[in-house]
Length: 230
Image 1: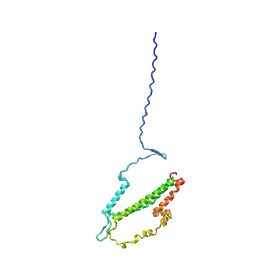
Image 2: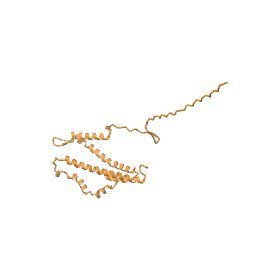
Image 3: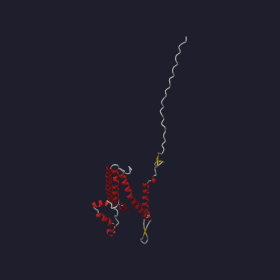
Image 4: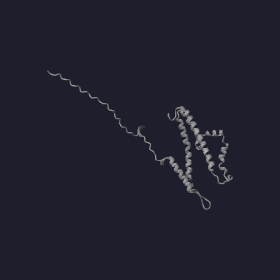
């Protein structure tokens, strides 16, 4: 008599263990943008050395100017004639630099103010910005006047020169004295409005250029056709 055979035990199916997916390492590459059918690779900002910054170059130029003016000034010849030194011979460079600065001030103010106002979406924000600008202007102008008065009373520039005021040329400051005497509040406010736009730029009248810039920039936010929406 055959013994009953035990049924074969079912082999358990092994469970598949879930393996956490390993994140694919990413490599940072320059961002590419497509513009006009061409791939443009954005360049990463490179930190410039300190000697290539503008403020450092300006400080070096100021120091060189002071040294040249101190060691090579104008001298007096044996017969009393003035002999221009190396420092005085460089005066045309200083005059040219001042002319270049005066030439660029009006266009920079016009472009900065006009485009800045045009990009605003809320004229109320413009009012707050203008109020803060006037507050800063009045505060630092007053502070500069106070510092100037303190320095003038402590250092006393011109003391000991023993110059007779009657011997000075009054015609050199007559124009400025007449303007200061004739200026009133109404005249000052009327002078802000330029007779012509070209005249304001040609004459270097900064307040007139600023007034024209504000008038040109204000209509753009309310019309919705400013540079940010074109």
